[in-house]
Length: 338
Image (cartoon, rainbow, N blue to C red; front, side):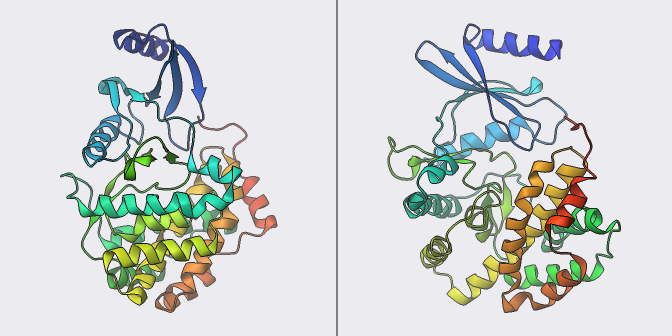
């Protein structure tokens, strides 16, 4: 710990921020830590991403530069020490979509429309080279977290995944396996900032994009509109889906199946991730989000294109009743792993 603190002090001194006031900012489910620095009237954000974690600070820096080259508001990189996992970032402020919408839910359409337009712009540009490009089968395997962690925590056994994997792979191949675009993967209200002083698409500030990869056009749209952390009004969701489909020239019926398939895959994976965060990382508060994700899963599985997958999920995945969630919580370590 002392060695890490010394490395950060050296980094800030070399960047000219050694005398800055430092204040902790809320983190996320990753190993990263953030601090806001204040030096006179100037501010910046320190990203502390220790080497050896799941996230690569070089990937963040590279993606930030790609997004900024497209005219989008990712934070500028002010200084970097990638071998030690340290970045000094432009401070985009505190006006997270989630915070603004908690204060005034009626702003959903105002804020979500430009966020959808950012995705359309992002998809219209060539993606950076060398990004991961998973197959439909790979995406189905990732959704198996629901069986490996959520179902396991709920029942004490891991169900046989063969039928589940086959049904989801078939749905993805049929409805969500077209030409790839750049997806940011965690595109939701906790990772978007409103910057009204900027113009056009630059009004949407972007955070947490280091896991960007190649994927399907509807994936980030689902992330935005089926948010695990907040309820999006049904009218807003339907309006934004229609906005995206119209702008891309997609057939509405085909896009509805595309959207539902990606939504089911994402919800299944998140169910498993949240259970794992409790069981392994000692973070039971993520269990409180599971009923919302379960509702989103049921909404997606209601699409006729997913009838086979729905039947399998009904058989393998118990509903997250209060008693079941309490059962999972009792399995949470008393001390978190980090």
